[in-house]
Image 1 (tube, rainbow, N blue to C red):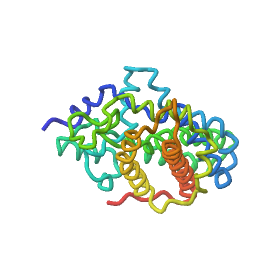
Image 2: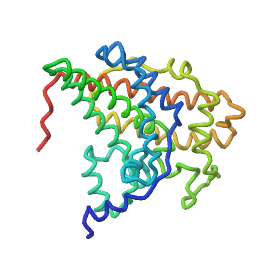
Image 3: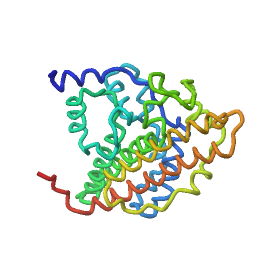
Image 4: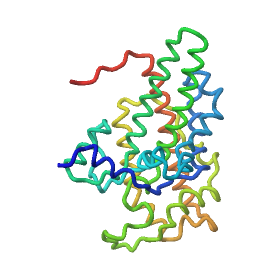
Length: 292
């Protein structure tokens, strides 16, 4: 068997997969901070513009094109569920997941968006923890800046995971090498038309905000992430069914298509607010001890 290190080198192949476009990602962070501000430390709300701005940050990294940084991070924006199986069975550790992919002789470009979320969640807990324990004003300011940055960037991956086409092999039209009995579109343009052109034309923050819930503590963060991504995957076929009957045309927006996309963005805002709030509460507790 080839070594894991050698196989990991196959990851360094560019992957084209965007989600929501700039407007959608900024809206997700915007409605999340609107919902969560009252349950977070004041410095978070004071930095709301930075948090919103950083919702698009990982897509800005794509400007570096074939740099090692960009090649490494491109696979963090999606998860091709069909290449793995039940999302509920993925381990919480990225490298355990990679090892299992190696053992299965699976595709290492399956995608890692659930890990991008849980790892940034851990960074946010850590930044909040150091903010709480800061010994000087400068330490507190620096820890707060770290939390602001991580919270915003985490919002990007939460947004990606809410877009159904980021949870499937059918990300740019129905995949050509699998059955297509319902004759769903194979047009690769559906991806950008759905998440960018339609959002730009027909979705505004008010329609997204009204369905975002006040954050509650997540009982189990990893299980919540898996359930969240599983819901996105469950909506792949409904998305393609709506596209088939003429929804998601940015030149002629329709109510059903608009409501479908607004609901996905609202779900992302709700999840992001809950992750921020849960991280804040967890940061006041002793660090958990890993199971042996």
